[in-house]
Image (cartoon, rainbow, N blue to C red; front, side):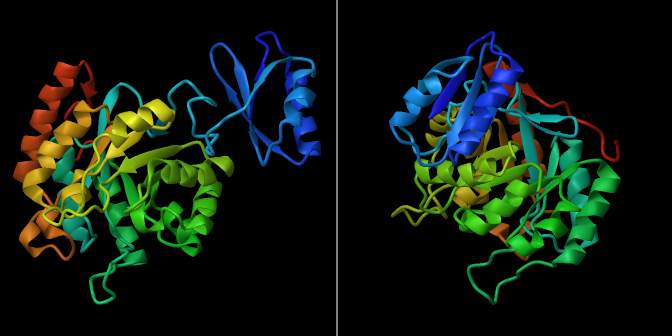
Length: 346
């Protein structure tokens, strides 16, 4: 349910509505737009509530929401959410590129990759440290040591860092190092973890689950938003279908669908979406053309020797080629690709 306040409603009237919600056992999340202020009511509502709240001073109308997700919906917030990370806006007019290795292997590997991707225009360094491997015998990350290596790469290049957090017990630790907390596909419905990253007050990137519907994905986003963390980015990374040639099936249609249903920014991960490096660039371009706010690309100095996901990682030359093509596409679409910067600059 949405409570729409009148344009001339006072702060006192707004506070009175929120107090009445609290007394009735509900919580209210306020969204102040250019033309109106809207309160999203969280909790199991019932029809009689509409009559109760419509008569309160300052209330213009009460609108039932048919969708099970409320805070992430366009009905609650018509304007796009922009997530700010340093001087980077995700969800604005620029196409933001996150790039780096699937797995942090050494300080030298991470710093070398950070320099290379920044030199051709990447904005954020992605590096997996705590790794959710399908097999317990696969490389599962370096843990705290890897976070130190990521911090060294940030100090060297000035790039912000995104890395995955796998359990609620690790949120505090990873938050001390990361600029963006990533919730991976296998943890999309780890609701205890979602609650914790919602409390962390750090930007969060939520990847779509392997077999998740768009509604399930937005309901997972609701967990984070309901904890008061509005710095949330969605990431389409392919879903599991009957096709076995590719690692996953990249759902490009999810990008404009999310843009219609939700105010949250959405980026695409064609590396996991395809599992084949030669398919990454075409799908990255397609995602950008479909309206993605950014891309996450796996890049490695020597993919043939990568400890994790080498077959889907671009080498430095192929990443540079992709960035040049993205620049052309962005121009054609009337968008901006953040300007290229020299390595080592802050």
